[in-house]
Image (cartoon, rainbow, N blue to C red; front, side, top):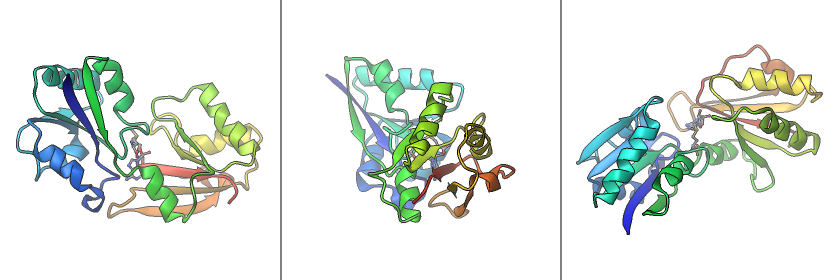
Length: 217
Ligand SMILES: C[S@@+](CC[C@H](N)C(=O)[O-])C[C@H]1O[C@@H](n2cnc3c(N)ncnc32)[C@H](O)[C@@H]1O
């Protein structure tokens, strides 16, 4: 059966790129990934590379699957870990049962965020609003907080940013004094972590590259 690898690139710093990720890219005939991913691996790419943009994700993944079926050694790079709000879901849909997809895990932004805040995350709820800002999903967040859970989440960079989230939660009856931390640009030079309360972030802007933690410790 044809094979294809999807490789987690980690949160962005070269320090968090695993050896197996580098080796996979080094051995690949075709590497497919976003600008940030291709830049991070530029020293290890020796074959063809294909840039994924917001406009061509489906076509790029289709090209990867087609090339794998033609026995090319293909690597698809996904930010953080491929299985958390990464490219894995879309890739599996496209690959179907004809291609054996191998997942090489990467360090997720969720993990780095938990580490920065020195929090355990086995007891937290994890949510991603990336590409899913449905009312049902938003209400899952409300229910988790009402149940006293701490939630680690990825905001949606366009339509459910940290301040939108704070507004929504307060409107749904979550206390304005609820603690919230926002970790921006984790592992990168401009990394920043701030801890406030929901009502204090209502008017604040954060970088699109951020992870939020909401709820009592
Ligand atoms: C499409 S999701 C991919 C998540 C990725 N699979 C992961 O495991 O981290 C992209 C979002 O992840 C978050 N993210 C990824 N890298 C980050 C970093 N270095 N610092 C903060 N947030 C990051 C941001 O919320 C960003 O908008």
